[in-house]
Amino acid sequence: MKNNRNIILSVQDLSAGYYIDGRYVNVLQNISLNIREGETFAVVGQSGSGKSTLALAIMGLLPIDNGKIINGRIQFYKEDLIKTIKDIRGKEISIVLQDPHSYLNPVIKVGRQVREALEIYGVGMTSSEIDAKIKDTFKKVKLDDIERIYNSYPHQLSGGQKQRILIAMSIINNPKVLIADEPTSGLDLPVQKQILELFAELKEQMNLTLLIITHNILIAKKFSDTAAVLLNGEVVETGNSEEIFLKPKHEYTKLLCGHAARMYRKG
Ligand SMILES: Nc1ncnc2c1ncn2[C@@H]1O[C@H](COP(=O)(O)OP(=O)(O)OP(=O)(O)O)[C@@H](O)[C@H]1O
Ligand SMILES: [Mg+2]
Image (cartoon, rainbow, N blue to C red; front, side, top):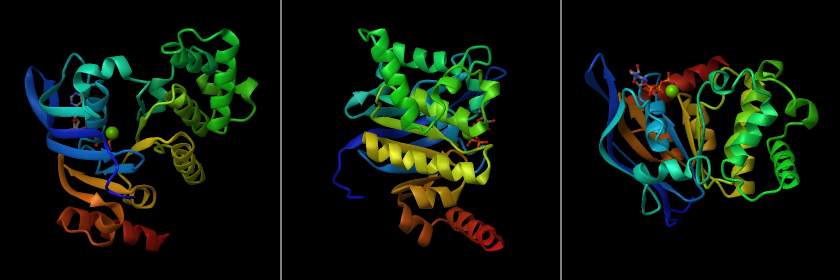
């Protein structure tokens, strides 16, 4: 990945956290990231390191009752994303949230949920154009048996199918940036692999810039061009993924890499 592409998403000195019992607790500490057009960028860190908080802060989805950005800037190209995200969320920038089960509405057929994701921005599309777009998106995410799946409730689908539905919702408006927060958690190993390969294919097909959030350093190593390692809400190391994971500098990255290597040897 060449380093001369434009920066599409940048986070500068971002600090954010949550109010708990009226007291502010900081989670993200002066995070800075530059994500370039067309790359896959991975944010890696253990549970609780603040990965989802970062994703939610970028998407303007921190809980309104207790989440807060206290400092820093987020830019989509030169645009102040903290101000504009509500107008472009789901369109220019989309997210596949962690924990799909709590995100899909259990009492609405998934086809209708995908349709709603499209209709937010699909103003002026005729009903048959909408149908065609939904079918096309189902094909893109490799859901077969389209009619049946369209008319299913979430509980009638497998974990992998549900994840594909969420991916369909996230790409249906042709975003430029797609964020995937732990996109394979809770899935069987073969399905994890299929989903990661699907992201890689969609990225090529749709010219996406991907931000993959994962605790799994092997996923980051295999699927990303650039990575940032998060520890207790701080970026401790960032740069070319291959370099980071082959020659980690920070002690924590070394620890993650050593752990991954041992897991790998055990098979
Ligand atoms: N809504 C919330 N209110 C208060 N604290 C929160 C909230 N959401 C997250 N936190 C806290 O913020 C910290 C970071 O959580 P976050 O979910 O961002 O971590 P994560 O890296 O995504 O973890 P995981 O890998 O388990 O998904 C944790 O200490 C968590 O308890
Ligand atoms: Mg998380």
